[in-house]
Image (cartoon, rainbow, N blue to C red; front, side, top):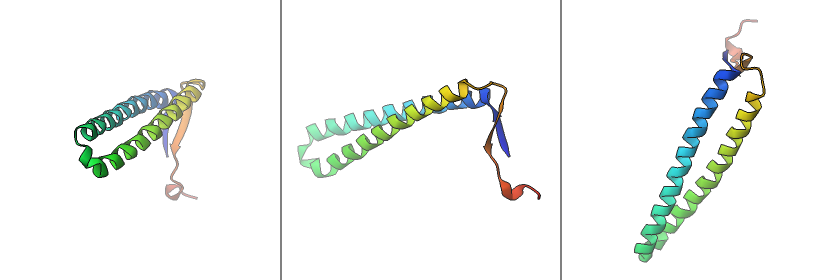
Length: 96
C-alpha cells in the first residue's frame, strides 16, 4: 500500500501542475514554430499543417489537464494536512 499525507499530496500535485504548464508552453511554442515554418515554406503545407493541428489538440488537452490538477489541489487543500490518503492499494500482496 502506498500512502501520502494530504500535505505531501498537495505539494506533489503543485509540482505536477508546474510541469504541465511547462508542457503547455512547449506545445504552444511548437505550434508557433510550425506556423512560422508554414509561412516561410507554403509548399510544405501537406507536412506542416497536420503537425499544427495535432499540437493544437495537445494544447487543448493539456489546458484541460491543468484545470483538473487545480481542482484536485483545491479539494486536497480543504482536507486536514496530516490526514493520510491511499494512493495505491495492491490487493494481491495483502494476506487474507
